[in-house]
Image (spheres, rainbow, N blue to C red):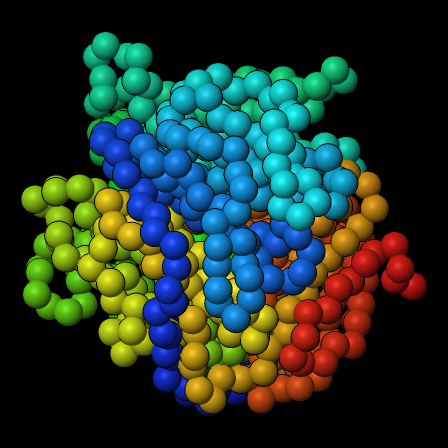
Length: 492
């Protein structure tokens, strides 16, 4: 833990607030199905009607997917949505830069891309190639001010008669062309369950693939694809081969150095990789408390199974915490059956302490996708978890004594309206936090919302934005307790 602790030693000790959540009554919905829905079950969160209260989309597997309208005060109702089964997950993205968020829906079968309309309407208006594979992961990035480049992670090739083991399908690159879109194979594929396009520890835009060795078994590994060079990184690039049961990706700058650490969930150890000054990654020391390899209640000593992971500041103390959705694949006897979710609260020295039981979110349901997002606009991030063959769950964050907070939203002209690829740095006194704006990661679901920063006792901060093209603006003054929209076209 020494490396991370040293990086954080300059940070002031934050006031400790005990995290607390209360369950919320929601409509009935479950992620159901057989083998093809052992994985997936993603959650997408985005504001589709412009009222600053985000809606929630839930994959359904064999059950119809569900779009929940946010009616305010943590009340939700089923919204009109095209009936769709076979859904493994979804990601919000503004493909056509019209100001209405679209939805890229992943399926065990042909993926569907829905164009957003006013008042949370959706229509099938995009013709985007990609085939009818078993899709389990998605990410997107912009290389210019035109349309996005996208990648779809495909799991086991269901048509391979020798499968399912050693039968991982090729992944798919979807790129803009003059007359629409082109699709090409990104190979080799090792059964990814999460993709993330973001700046890596070198500061380069890369595509990270977290792969499930359950099906590639041997010869596969975690992958990084350099977007500019269009090639997979190797040991010569400092990319050491790692083979895990990769499930989800969470990326965030934990040390304030402008480089993101990366959490990779798995069956057994959850691997936190610390970004190094030379652009490589090092596994976090065991003592940091992030590995969460067995259920913390002590009633099952078998390995734990991690799925969706996300860094957010639960108590707004200025230190990012970590949520990990947990749940057995189905009835896998080698792994814990009763496997409650983790809520790992970051301490001032950079270590993490389990708090899920005390917080009230230690559900025994087989969790899959999840989301930490401020659903009621009170500045505290709430929690949604989609469960396999069990009702999904929503909890309201009611933590008392939480610190101040700031939301930051970005706009810019051109095709990349939401400034995907930007890095935002918030500074108070001599302390800085930075976040990337990305589409991807998690497990089969993501968010497109204002970036959330906990500020502790600080009420006034300055904001610096490195926009996707490398232009830097700021410092922009900001006050706690609101969402600040930085529109690049209106900045001096």
